[in-house]
Length: 292
Image (cartoon, rainbow, N blue to C red; front, side):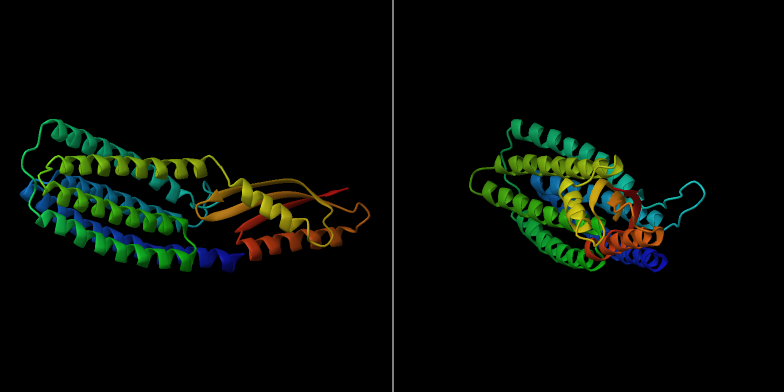
């Protein structure tokens, strides 16, 4: 168990690399998009730039969560600080939603204001370039997330992918506005605003689900199916699971033959613990044995 815990801490440390890369990329791209967006008066590119500004905050929140999660258990956090990632994600979702609503308001105001001149085509090329950069960051973070089995880093990777497609959408709107359709630029900005709000909502739902001890019902059934096939287990009376950050903790009540000696019953419970840890990557298992 101690060795497994150390490995999880090492994985969190490695996951910081993905957060740092995302922060660096978002800072550069946000500055570039906002500069070109204001220079060319492109509502879509400005909205995309503000989107990346919120992504900086989100990535910083993930980084802080990863760092706090590495703190070992103490007297008032007996289960450790694993859930710090979820708290940081929830804070980031509030910030992203606020910015998304602001982008929507500005874009809708611009659309109804009757924009007459399309933005310079350089703003479209800027969006395409930034999308290419974010695709590269996405593939790196996805590979890292799979390597260390990190939900937080994988969530960051999905955010990278979402940002890449947002930039593509902004570029399409800007290009379309060149064909005597200047209203396409603010419409693209409205779409970007909605995407920001949707991403914020998805992050909030995921974080709140974990913080309130929500758990995937299918995984529960998979655990139960594995347990009942352990030699000596007659049935599973009760099973519950919850997440501490990226770590799964399972509580089980199993039924065994009432005539078994204590040591044999203990060996069965140990077998249940081991098989869940090996086959399902469960971090910790608490098994209670009852006679049938």
